[in-house]
Length: 463
Image (cartoon, rainbow, N blue to C red; front, side, top):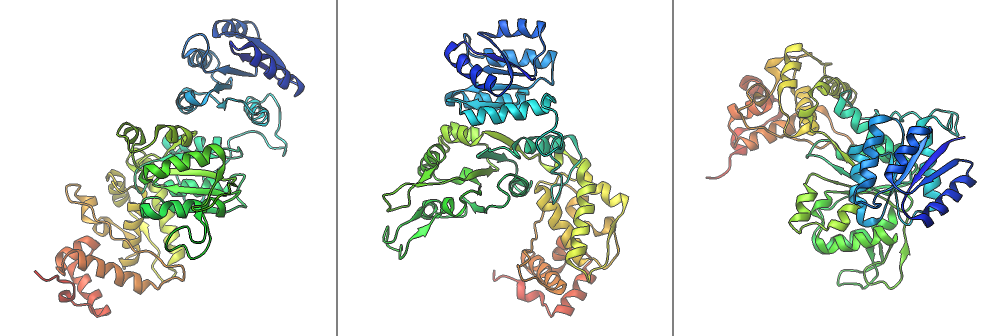
């Protein structure tokens, strides 16, 4: 029988929680402050501690957590918190080792679920319902690649979200670091995997249209509203709504989004009826939202509401040991995409150069470079002379030649031609510069230009 220690100076709440947990079959002890809790922990073994965030002193819950983690790092601690303290509680989960938090007023079903999860990690409940143990789910799959310590920490944070009814997640990280991949993986491997995944880039929608996109509108609500339209919150019902670049959301819309997250209902523009929505909102940003809050560009209450379990995606330069894994994965991916292309291997010297480079554009930049080399190179080996100049000489500016593959597919020749046209356009038709951008010799560029009927003067701009 699992033993739980409840810590709170609110006797009424202690009594209620104790009754609920005892009915679930747990042994429950209660104390009124952290000092009494530590004394009880010295004398008795517990499988879980549930502590209030604030008691007689402001951060007593944090102090208790730290002392528990020093003496028994594996003992799970659930933190009870009011909304005003939510940011502090989130930090305890993200950085101090708290298992999770319970937001007041505490919902009985949430309490039971989180207690069960915590006890399973302790091994106090034995096996889980499906007969498997409570080990961290294996989510290192798809295109999320990494064995480094930084990536393992990322996987650990993702695992804390999976198989929970977490309805708000905030993903932070630099451009190109893989935030959208993380969001899709959380959907694919979570409880809502069979429901819709709807994504929107908040920075790509004009301010005048963003509310209509999110919440919908009624016919005649404004000049161009010729018919009723469901918003993305309705379309994503029971599924996941991914709000990419949330930092670009207009302040006025931030206020309405906060209201939706708190009340779990929307009202279409021009409508009079409220519509209940059940949506998990995953937001992502490459901006410093704390600074945006200080600058008045982002609401602090919305930030705290979204930042339930923060996930930070590390930039590629902070885990270069994963670059060989990523390179091999991407080369295999391109081999599958371009069956007519020659297979490729990367020499140790070239791999070393790839590891030394800082990758300001992160994994997206690495993928773009490798794709370009893969389709342009006529060799089976990717050596130093195949690499773009800026990788070999970090004093050179980076280039970012991209080519989006349409859903219907495209031929390898079309991709090669597109890369060459892009390089010629960027270099104003200068062949030497275009060849450097592509990482090939000028002679090879001329050969390809002749093959595709391209002329340098067609890419020169009028002076």
